[in-house]
Picture 1 (cartoon, protein in one colour):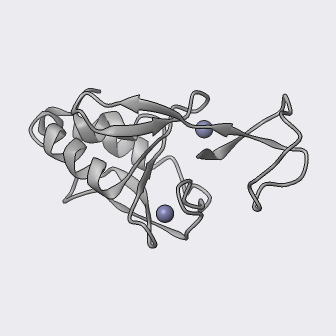
Picture 2 (tube, rainbow, N blue to C red):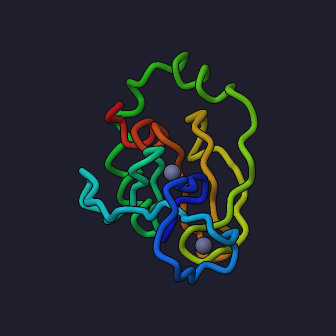
Length: 133
Ligand SMILES: [Zn+2]
Ligand SMILES: [Zn+2]
């Protein structure tokens, strides 16, 4: 899986199995990570964005449900108003994603894949959802 946002300028291996990647541009691979909730997620080492499957996201959400209630709403709002991000392609299945607010009135906007229901979170959004921020 590759980060839907980052393209490494360093180049990379010649083989390119990702049909959507432009030629000669190496994507940044997501690194598997064990989330504090026990869920398996994948993290971009460059932008700190994270991808979680639908199942993993349920675990993360339950984990963060209480903690994120204590997060500063003002801070989250400030982040939510930083402007529109370009639409991304699902890193897991290359499906179309739709941007929507995670859960009810969290003011955290994530990209949800309409095909596999996987969730992409930009840097800091996972921490807003799991309450560790
Ligand atoms: Zn990235
Ligand atoms: Zn997908």
